[in-house]
Image (cartoon, rainbow, N blue to C red; front, top):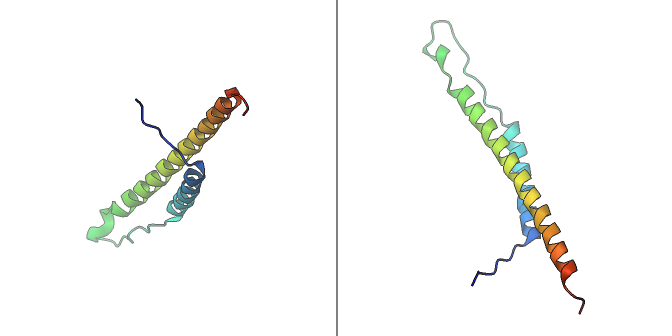
Length: 90
C-alpha cells in the first residue's frame, strides 16, 4: 500500500520566499579582481573571475529551483482543488 504523503504548501511557500531572498543576495555579491601590476605574478590570476562566475551560476540555479518549486505548488494546489470538487458534499 502506498505511503500517505502530506505537503504543507504554506511551509513550501515560506521556503521559496527565503530562497528567493538568498538568490537575490547571491546576485549582489561582488568579488573584486586582483589589481594587476606590471611584471607581477598576479597579473594572470583568474580565480576572482571564476569565483564570481560560480556565485552567479549558483544564484541562477537557485532562482530556477524556486521557479520549479512555485510551479509545483501551483500544480499541486490545482490538483487538490480538482479532487476536492469531485468529492460529494457532506
